[in-house]
Structures are given as structure tokens and as C-alpha cells.
Image 1 (cartoon, rainbow, N blue to C red):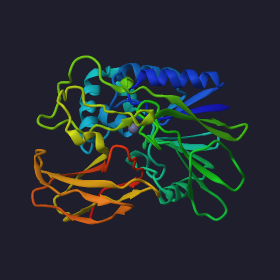
Image 2: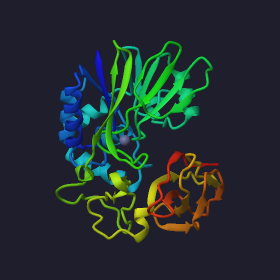
Image 3: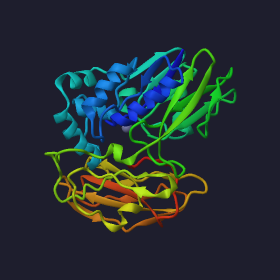
Image 4: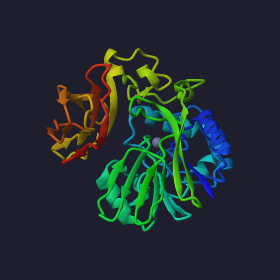
Length: 361
Ligand code: ZN
């Protein structure tokens, strides 16, 4: 049986169509979707309909849970948070019920799958490094694990040594005594990786025992919003939490919340990644837990603390990070959340983040 394993469609119907057509040409029998059917993109209802019609299994992603009301959307960055409200208003009752009913994990043909991780699927942790991979290998007996959520294709392998390793995503044949974690990347909202931004998915051929990665051109405009402005827009915020999508050849394009309508700050095109962390009032320190890949360009790390209304309490001066930062930053009084922004130092230099997991001390 040949399975196309797809993930993170993000309401991008045209990208999904393209991937399904490509998988069809490659003789795929069944499509397994690792979740995040909605969130971010322009066409949630159409994408839900197409996923329902074409996938044998669809798992729940964190955006699906947030939009359907089953999960919590409070930790979402602005761009994603705005899409939650917009998608909830756009989607039919039937689609919302369907999203709410999606399973968090599944097993098929010797493989196990979940949106974020297999240790605790409803929590949507990320598998970002060899340690995370190790915990996932311990959480299931499956030889082959599929996860999405990061929007970046990835591969982890563990063999007789028992030490999991991260390998560059590559086509492979399943070997005896080895186990694998495959992240197929994102269909509808790929993140830039190694200077490229493409839709991607994987094909698992259970009879041949092979996994192959497939990449397709991705059009930035396909995730841009269409139609009227959403009703729910946070005032005063440069809905800035845009996620960077770089076209090939380092031409950089930006996606904004549709109604932001404002010119972005000049340094916005330097932003690589943004994460927001809610604070419970008791924690006194936070850490970015940021690690760059070996050979990556350096980045600037900035922290902005906001109160419960989203007003800035304090902005730390940018910190230069060459390889990693586990530094503890003191939380100012009155801060209810902190936003970590990673920016490139100059537009030409491409930083590569290996992990970024802000946490409170
Ligand atoms: Zn996603």
C-alpha cells in the first residue's frame, strides 16, 4: 500500500490540490493527514471539504482544536489568533463538528502518527531535536513514526546504539533494527528551510518498505487572505506576528493578517521567528532556549513583555546570539506575557534555527 502522508494544510486549498494531484500521479492508494487542516490560510471550508473527501485519515492539529473550540487558542501569536476567530466564523457547523471529532493519533501499516508528538498527542509538543525523538521512540513500538507541526521536513533515526540521530530529510528504505521519525513538512504553509520554501509531503510504501520526500513549488500568494477584513483585529498591534516565507533565491515575501493594512516596521523583513509565552505571574525568569544549527548566521534575540491588555511593559535590548542562548531574563512586574523575536542580522545572511522553545523558570 502506498500512503501519502501530508500535514499542515492550513486552509490552503490550492496547495492541497497540487499535492493530491502529484500524489495521484505517483500511484498513492491512501492519504493520511497529520492535522492542521485549518488556521492561517484563506479557504478553511474548501480545504476541510477537500481533506474530508480525499484523506483516509485526518488527525487533529492544534489549529484544528483551537478553531473548533476543543482546544485552547490563548497561546497563539497574533496572526494565528486572528485566523482562529475568522475561521470559526467562516466554517459551517458540519465542518466545525468534524474538526472537533478528529482523533489525535493513529496507527497504520506498522506506522504511528500524530500531529505534534506521540508522547502526549493532545498536547502538541514538537519533535525538534534528537532528545525529543528519543522520547517519541520510547512512547510507541512502531518502527516508523510520522509527525508534523513544525512545518519543516525532518528525519530522525535510531539504530542498535539506541542513540537517536537527526539526519537531513532524504528518501530511504526501512532497515532491520532501525526506527524512524519522519516529518513530511507542510502542504499549505511551509517555513523556509535551507533557503527554500516549498510544499512538501512524504510517501510511505509499506510493501517496498520505503519512504520518499516530495517537494512542490509553493506560491506565497496562495496563503494570503481574500475577501473582507475579519471582524476581530487587535488594535494597535502591527499584527506583526507574520511568519516568514521566503521564496527561492532569497526573495523574501511577507504574509500579514489581512486587516493589518499598515506598513510593517522596516526591520520586519529581518524577523525569522516569533514566539509568545504566557506567564502565570509567579515566574521570575524566562529563557528563550534558542539553538542555531552549526554554521548558521548569527541572530538577534529580543524580548518584549506585555501586560494582560497586550500593552508593552518592557522591551529588552536585543541580544546577539551566535550559536545558542539559554540565558535567563528577568521578568518585569506586571508582565502577563513575553514575546521572543529572533531576527537575522542582515538580510543576506540566512540563520538556521535548530530549536526554539521559550520557557519560564
Ligand atoms: Zn501547523
